[in-house]
Image (cartoon, rainbow, N blue to C red; front, side):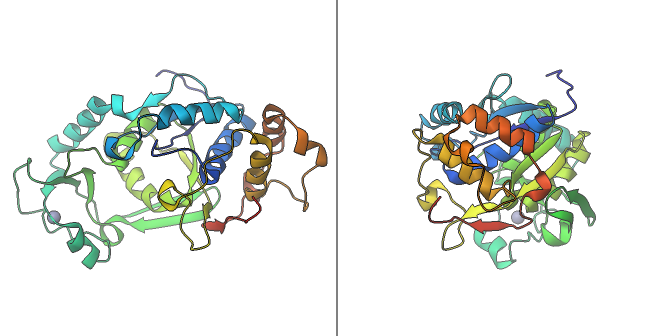
Length: 300
Ligand SMILES: [Zn+2]
């Protein structure tokens, strides 16, 4: 891609089921941030794990975005069609001696508190056995998140060498997202705070692969009464295509975009396109609550 706009944002859902209110908040925030900057808003389907993706889910996501007036720029990128790009990036790192095989169990890593102890670094397992990990330095990666403020993480101490190709042969999210953000020339990433912890790994991969690092803004994620992120696994209610305006208003409210208690009454009957235009004209990313999670109100 050769587009070099000043602002290129994206929405990158996994087609594991229909969009729900949490996905609408994520889509809307990235859309409004892009549109308020006269930027492009690209769409990427993160469909790397076919076992978790019902065949119709990707098409359903596209028609839902359409029904909500969230129109994207350019062609949709499908990660399932980008495997050779991920293989090339992995090969680049392999040639530099930064990749090794690991056959450790998930249970072992849990015992370590989720921080991998790099025990396979020196074992020299054949490249066909197990997952492939990238060596991380004992170094702090820091950045200033537009919403959540200054962040830092020592990759070796707080994460450990991490997986780029899974044991089952699938490319890991961390590798694919970095390769695709560079491929699509993404300048601004607006996404849920559940990915805040992943950002230092992505900054590291960008540095290794010679890619620029985008700006990051991590929004609070919508959680249910038990504090779990809304997801298909937690039976989140799919968006109602018959009532886009009411749900867009609820999402704007969630994002702190109504300084008063109630939105302007005429917005309640607006078409999605009018509401989105209002939202872009009034978008204030600093009004987004600086929280990691917000419980879903029962009336939204
Ligand atoms: Zn291991």
